[in-house]
Length: 114
Length: 114
Image (cartoon, rainbow over all chains, first blue to last red; front, top):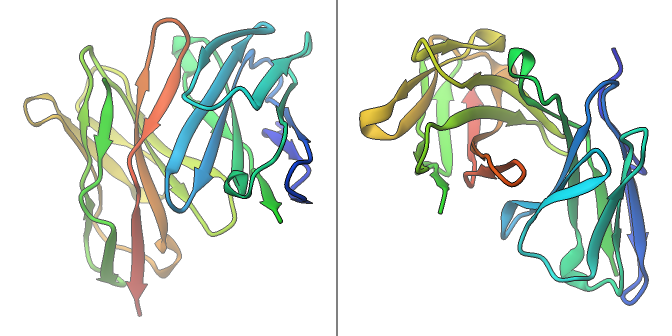
């Protein structure tokens, strides 16, 4: 079956711009979460969505936002980009079912802010 | 608050040698624990997970991990390392309740000498 699809794979933006990243989860997975990975801070949790509702949010400024659609696809948006937002953004989908539990990650979107 | 410590930032082993990567966690309830592997520029691939039951967990690619509650550890092992195992390895603990999220360790970079 298809895995978690993140688009685009690479993105270059200028400071002050905004960006939208997309994540299509595995079919049947209703939970989608987002993580930021940087060399300095490592892997940090951004937010989690389940059935179009944000259930959990990490310690990031309000410039970082997200949403989930009825088909479970998710987008995250970063407004007023800063150089420090350069990172690999990873999306993970999970099945809220203890018989087959786990998080499957996409290949990520590499965002470079110049 | 939950946390994960991976004390070894870099480890170098010879091909064919055994491997153990250390992971210590802090979490108030019964932990759900994961090991992921990441190749350069890629997403995270799940190696194995522990929820309950048998404390020795088998994963993909010949990896196993042992959960030791008394030591708050979840160390990853492989009896014979292959050159293709060179990558970065992340241990994670899941926080549940009010939404779920993974808290990751800082990772261990594995180098395999031929």
